[in-house]
Length: 329
Image (tube, rainbow, N blue to C red):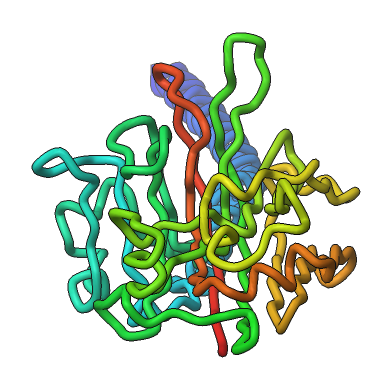
C-alpha cells in the first residue's frame, strides 16, 4: 500500500512538472509574439514620422514663401505732382461738367466726388483715370476724366506760347477700353496741347470765350499711338483771321509703328518756337516744323493729359493709367 501510494505521488509530481513545462513554453511563446509586435511597432514608427513630417515641412516652406512674397510687395504711388493741374469729370453740376482744382485735387484719394474717376493703383504705382459717356464741355461732344495744366495753380489765365516752349513727359497704359458694335476697340485721347485766345484776342474777334483749337491730340487707337495736328485751310491766312477756329482743320494724322496694346509706354511732347515733336518710347519720333507751326505761334497754349473717351456708345468706358507725368517750361 505504501509502495502504491508512492507511485501515485511520483506520478502526480510528474504531471505537475509537465503542467509547469507547458505553462513555461506557453509564456515563452507569448513573450516571443509580444517581442515581434514590439519590433514591428518600432519599425513602423520611423515610417509614421516621415509621413507626418513631410507635410509639416511643406507647410513651413509655403509659409516662408508667403512671408517672402509679402515682403516683396511694395505699395507705390504715381510720380505726379497735381499742384498745377485741374481735372474735368464726366459728371455734371448745374448743367456743366464738374471740375476740381488745387488744392482740393491734391486730396483726390479722400474726395468722394473724385474717387470713382481718379484713384491710385498703389500696387502698380499708377494714377487711374476712369471715364464713360456723360457730361461734356461746351465745345465737345464727348466726356472725359482729364487733367488741364494750370501754370498759376487754381487759375486758367496764365498759359504759354510756342516761343516760350514746354515739355510734357508721361508714362502710361490703357489696360481697358470697350468695343463698339463691330467688335472694334473704341479710342481715347491721352494727351493734348490746346490753344487759347488771350482776353485781348477774344475781344478783338468778338468771341464769347477764350477757346481755340487743339494743335495736338494724341490718341490710343486700336492698340497704337496716333497723332493729329491742325493745319491752315489756306496757308495765306494772316492777321486776326488766323485766330478763328474755322481757319484750321485736322491734318491726315500720323500713326507710330510700334503697337503698345495694353502695355506701359512713354510719351514726350517737346514744343519750341515753330516746332512740335512727339516721341514714343524714346524710339520713334515725329516732328512738325512747317508753316502751320510757325503761324500757330500767335496762340497761347496749355497741356492736357488723361482719358478723353471718343464715343457716346451706351455702356462704353475706358481706363487710362498714368505712372509718371511731368511738365517743364
